[in-house]
Picture (cartoon, rainbow, N blue to C red):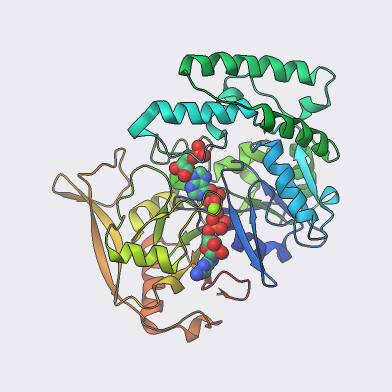
Length: 421
Ligand code: GDP
Ligand code: IMO
Ligand code: MG
């Protein structure tokens, strides 16, 4: 193989990446996160238990797995410590299975405050950020002010921390933002101390050593392509490159070393937070998708906005990511629907376009293709041939439109509810 395979969300996040990585891990020794941070919430269900992973790669529960937090990730010591303690409580020896890149940037307590201050200053035009400090931390990274995990080992780490914190305190004063980080800062220091017990690695060297030794590696994306800072619905995006190219810079993998690219999408669409969502439904169908699909944030609990599958956006993500296999999730949520729609174009100023435009605003109207619902429970299906004809028509239409095969279909949160083709 000698390449890194990639799992990515193709929509606005929460496509089911956690489940898919967990299903695919028997085939991989190494699972690596390459961007994002605790804004992610990846749900795993197995053996009657549920977990939500935020910074830790979804391979952590597999025996003998190596899990890497890559240089492109931003890490909150408090959130990561909390997450690792919960995993440890399951009898998992996290210290032998999790490795943190020395080049991964650290989220400071004041980064979270800056996130909150910036959002409240934006008022109505707020991004709907998860308020985990993601944006401000990436700003300090590109602004060349950030603190990295490798710095934790330096003698003057606390002095460096204080310097950056003071800069943030001055900025927060300009925002006129009131806050108290006393308690969080104590937890943060305790988190740093706990994490000192882990191996901080030169992850680009380790990842490339695995590649050269032909060890199977899976890169696990967070968020989704439509939240990418360059290609998403800017400015309503996250602050990292969620697209496939993010693997190269977030792990130190050359473009020629990218192998299979698994693009995950829901059979419909969801989005949390603000920003354009052309196929959003404000009627009872949207309500049904939310209710049946339990579409509430895994971390924040916020209701997710729901709508029909958007092929215009999906084709755009497939193009930018170079997707080689599609994975369709959660079609089971639409089991009872009489009619199911897919947007195949956008009407802009009376003209129908089939590409994702620079500006997506309220004047844009989706153009739909309608499908007859399958009207039966597909949750128990385990082989593609056993799906109803209406369901197969839906899948094969998506394949024809994107030009990419749907290799895996998920019809429930558990491992077993997965069909390989
Ligand atoms: P991620 O952020 O991409 O990992 O996705 P989330 O975990 O935030 O959200 C996906 C949700 O859908 C989780 O609650 C999963 O347990 C659930 N889920 C995943 N696949 C399926 C499926 O095929 N059918 C149903 N009904 N639920 C699913
Ligand atoms: P996973 O990995 C869904 C959204 C937020 C907000 C925008 C910016 O679970 O799919 P940020 O905190 O990054 O500044 O928020 O991005 N967002 C997500 N939406 N799933 C996620 O992660 C998300 N991570 C961030 O709701 O609109
Ligand atoms: Mg999620």
